[in-house]
Length: 444
Image (cartoon, rainbow, N blue to C red; front, side, top):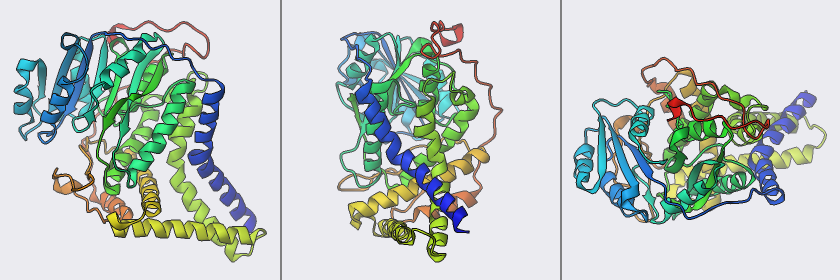
């Protein structure tokens, strides 16, 4: 009995340890041993900024003022806002900026974010397309910092860095993510971008499948698969207020459902000879999908090993105590909310993200690919004033596992659309050594 439990225990621990500690240390060391040389330069290509919005009247005016104030020549900048069936006055606000060069494109009914992005990209005329969201504040020099990376002809996409002035839980997770992304970029490429602010070469854009959940992974990855680099630029800073753990649960569930979906849209990411980022994709993205199951296996096997007095019993008692303490701190973080300490908030966030992976699997299996909109958020002194719909309302003190149970049983599913077949992707330029495929007519 204890032999099987021991195998489950150590294999589960290995999965968790490599995913959250081993891989970050590996990519850190790799970036120190074999860094890619940066080839930045001050360039000013034409840029089209595409913003997909659905009922964003609370944020859109401030966002357009922010974009218009960016340090970049106005005659080389195009701003396109695609309003996806907005009914809250978003269109009227955007239309009031027409005399300042902002273009409004309206979808009469809500078609989803991928369709909105596709419409905006078709209308873009710049050499580069910058995709952004409505809520976050963009630093004045962020666009110029992002554009500098495209002086390197090998760079096909560049991502900004999301920063949060206050880090109570999810913000600490984002800082951890930024560490990994910075070193992945130094080694070669990211396996995704910050959806709130990233840029690509217009000729490399491919239309998103209608049900795409993570455009900021699909687009950068299909560019990387054609031999270009996707880089991280921390000087291109964008700012957001930290989400509640429940808001982060909702966002992460969508992202992780998108990770499952990505394997269907871009199956070549699992081919080590066609994807030079195979190790990064598996280690950074796919192994996290297995971590909730590894946690269950670790706890269950640990209990059995303690109860059967297996060899190494003192170690198993200590690790079982550590697991129970971690879950206890997570429970305290959920109930205490703002009053919880930093360690409790970290444990709460970690457990929330594991449950989000299970919810992501549920969404993928049931094809619940709806555009869920903005997440609930908070800042230092007050809760955000945005009022979500009844179906997406969360309490700050609500346990993430009860939230997950409620979402699971809600039965809410989006209308199922036929899934487009992804375009064939040529072999990477870097592995094996072949010439980069030219842009096709569909890539403009």
